[in-house]
Structures are given as C-alpha cells and as structure tokens.
Length: 276
Image (cartoon, rainbow, N blue to C red; front, side):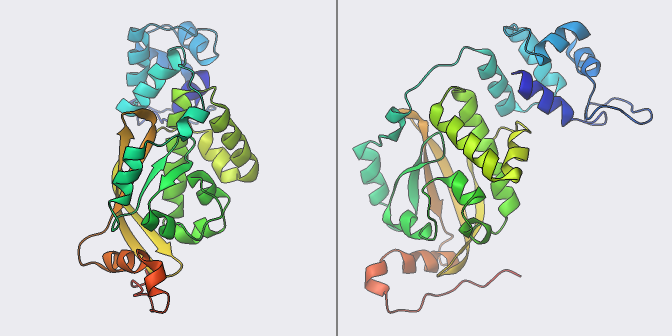
C-alpha cells in the first residue's frame, strides 16, 4: 500500500489536483501535505500511511485518499484490496481449465480464443490462437512482450502493449501479493528489462477488458484485432480472451488462412497491407 501511494502521488502534478504551483518544486509530483489537505486528514497521518506505519486505515480514509490522488474506480478497488488482508490462493489450482471452457474455445474455429492465468500464462488455447502466437518461444504474455525478440515486431504499438501488460500484472498482484508465480515473474522481468522495471514502479493498474490490438504476424502481415476479456466464474483468477476480426476484412482473410494450416501449406497467404 505504501509503495502504491507514493507512486500515485509522484505521478500527479499540482495542475492535475487543481492546486496552484509556485516556483520550482523539490519533490516529484504532489507533496505529502498537499495530498493530506485534499483528503481532509492530518499531514502526520498521511505520512504514516505512505511510510507503511499505518496499515489498517478505515474505509472512509481509503476513499478520501483515492479521491485526493484522482484514482479511477479500478485503481481505487486495487487500493481497497491492498488494505484488506490478502486471500491466499494456490498457484497450481490456477492451471486447471474446465473441460466445458475447452470445448467452448474449440467450437469457435474462426476466432482465436485462450485462457490466461494471473501471471499471464496462456493456460489453454484453441488452434487459431496457437497459430496466431506461433512465432513466440514462451507461452506467457509478459515474456512475449518484454523478453522475446518476436514481441517488438508482433505488437505494432509495442509501448502500449508494454504498459497494458504491466498494468494487468499489477492488478493480479494486488489480488494476491504473496503469489509465488507472479512474484517470480516480476523478479525475472525486472532483471531482464529496464522498461518493465520502470513501468512496474509506477503502480498503474488496468485489467484486460476490450479494445483493439494492432498486430503483425510473420506469415499473414498486419492484423487489426478486436478483443474481449471475461472473468471465468468457476475460476475467478482466470481470464477468457477472445479475438475477432471485422467481417470481410483483411484480418478475417488472414484468420481464415491461419485456421487450417495443414490444408493450406502450399498456398500463399493473403498479406494484409503493411502499415507505414
């Protein structure tokens, strides 16, 4: 909690908080006393929060600090989780994907679909999702982005993919800060990638929901993919992710070519137009 509060305070400017700015400031972001004033509490109490000397603030205090820091609803809920005692879960239980979900994925041959664990491991994927990610050595989305050389080409907006990946991992970490799998991955990527380490220190939180990804597949070229992510009710720490293409688009044609690879080995793939 203390690390989160410091990172979010340092990310704010006085203008963000509607405060005047006079002269050069010696601290990054807002001052602690400014956050305390905006939250309606004493400066000493807020300092104790940020230094980790007050670990059980009331819900009213949490909401006041969230408003002062301009947190959105997802970041506010993340702060609430950091205050509450963590609910420990077993990492090995997160690997099991239900047979019903596997059948559902296989029943969508024209749409890539896969299941993610909290550490962004691909736990299961249908044939088209496997073909889409065929250029990667790892089955973990975070490693794909930060340590696999293919990631820089595959994700056409790599910086956006990197920010999103770290924010999703940070959200998972907030659900279970003691998760051995998540912590091992964070340590590994922090050592391997200075970019990851810098983004992780910002404590930004964003779960995967829906949007558009711009990808570049080594065999079929540029893809514009609409994605949606759903929480699995039977395994609430898993995400079910589905990619779709606009009907009659170049991406739909590329998906069709990738879908039955054994039957089309001799055909030339219809390459989407390369972005400039």
